[in-house]
Image (cartoon, rainbow, N blue to C red; front, top):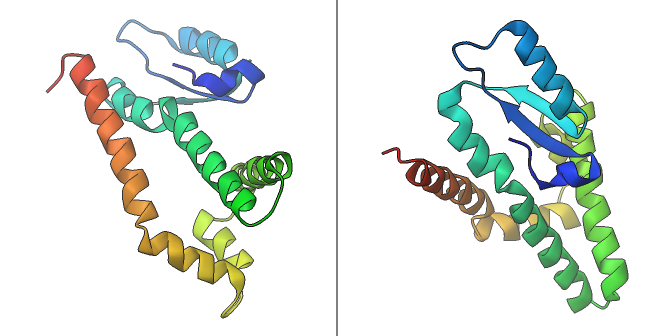
Length: 152
């Protein structure tokens, strides 16, 4: 199951092997899905979690980019510059997570300085329960995927 960024070769796909699938089958499937982004292999019973996180995830990202862009406009930036700043900033952050060897928390700490602008922004995000809200979104989407699949 690839997600929508596969449309531009930046997709995230997850494969689950069936009981009859061979290693050759898996290799062939990976080759196909790797053509449109990255691929992971998970157990079949985790595919609903993949749907909740990665299948629905682009929409979560779009909302975050839109909100950051709106905030930039609110603070005086033009829409086109605010959108470019928001989208490229998240793209760069995502690439650091994928290509680096540091945990996202460590990367976040590299941006912050004592009593600086970033920690002030992080405090506002935490007061808004951003982590709990994002986790709840993935959980809700996962549970809905289970419902749609006829699982309890």
